[in-house]
Image (cartoon, rainbow, N blue to C red):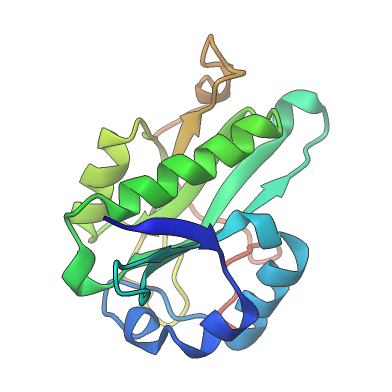
Length: 183
C-alpha cells in the first residue's frame, strides 16, 4: 500500500531512478522547480511502505477564456518499476482529478507517446478519451507522435469538454506554448 503527500523540494534529488526510466519523459530541473513553485498542491508523491519514493505526478490547473475552460493538465507521471501494476499510477491520477474537482475544473488532459500502449490502456481504463494525435510532438524524436487525451470531471456532467474531440492528426504550430519544455 502506498500513501500520497505533496512533493517536497528535496524529493527532486531522490527520484533519479524514476526520471531516467525509459517510459518517463526527461525534463530539466527548471521544469520541476517551476511546477513546485506555481502548483505545489498539484505535485504529489507516492511513498512505499518503507517511505521511499514509488511514483509522482506533476500537474497544473489552467484558466481558460471562460469558467468552462478551467482545466487541469498532467505534466508528468511516473511510477518506479517495482511498483507498476499495483495501482500506484491510478491512485495518483485519481487523487489529482479529485484536487481538480475541488477547484471546479471541467476536465483534465494529458499527452503521451503513441508507442506507450500500457499507459494508453491505463488512461482509457481511468476514463480518458482520445482527443487527437499530435504529429512529431517530441523534440529529438520526429518519428514519435503523441496522443492528446481528455477526461471530463465532476462538474461536466454532460461531457461538453469532449465535444471538441476531433481524433484527427494535427501538427502543433511551433509557437504554440507547450508546458512540456525539456529544459
